[in-house]
Image (cartoon, rainbow, N blue to C red; front, side, top):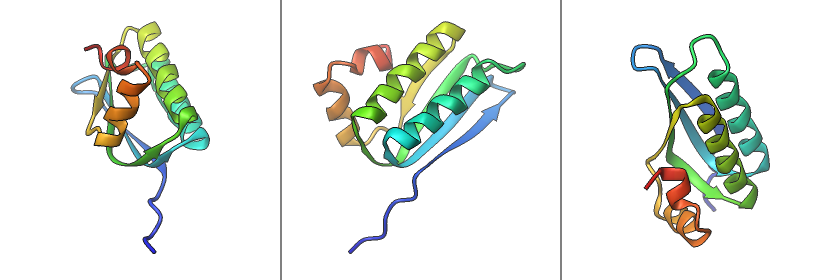
Length: 110
């Protein structure tokens, strides 16, 4: 039996580059997705709103349909704020899910 992956959203704004990096770990599900949306939305409406949001999925263990919906909502928030969204460290299962659901181009700007 393997130890469960810790789930969480960890934000690290960098005022020098005007980039918000958000590390997503564990399962991106309803609870983690709601936290992700709240964190990104709060930073985008703050006084030093970033011009880019970088989601780092290097520690992602899985994603369910509600997690995918959260990514789409984050994309909407970024578009409304004029911020660029980047999805970095995408594991193969996330690549497959994004392509299979036809949202890869929309989320990555490809």
